[in-house]
Length: 311
Image (tube, rainbow, N blue to C red; front, side, top):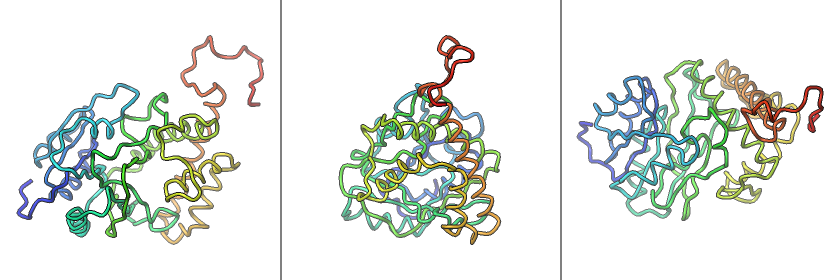
């Protein structure tokens, strides 16, 4: 990275797999960082060559199929030379204004970590409504003090080797940065659908755990009077018990939270979210039919004509 501006004492962590379209812009946006790691999962495209050409350190992650996943493994095993780590996905960009704020905040920090607000772009348009903004993510923190929670979803196949919507559990107080991080995916709708097909596997397990009370250890937890993440987790425990969730999700996004103000992109995004919720629902039904297990062996199936306990 041949930049002339002073480096900021932050180590950037970028999880990647076959991200040759998004990676160049992402790496360019973090050029001010003192150190950049790209943690790759055996990419078959030009991702590795792109990362190395821009001066990033490329590390290969080999997933064991369970735990830890990529970000937690990286936090445990990489030799960061800075106290502060900034986690950036390949489809995200750190603006110069945000870098200026980061540089200022870590000089004399009041907190052990900071939430960044994501500005999500879809079909070239900022999705400002529908509950997509603000979108707070804890991405900047002292790496020795933060680890991602384990929501006990690792037994579900085809969810990928990277944390999906798990949150960081941090030892210490957390602050908020003012400048936005940008979320701009250069890939097409096909990739959005493929990614959310994997995500719906993960979400179905999270829903199942919320309904059954499983996997509540080592998580942030649900608390109506807690922080924003805890309140969201509390509301989700109610949400999973509601009927007609696909319709409700579209209604909530497009009407009640004014997603229609984002034009056609907002309408398409709302329809896709509704479809995503439907996929979560049918995968949750499948989990409940088989007692929380998938890929059930023929011996474990009920006899022909037997009624399910959930009917």
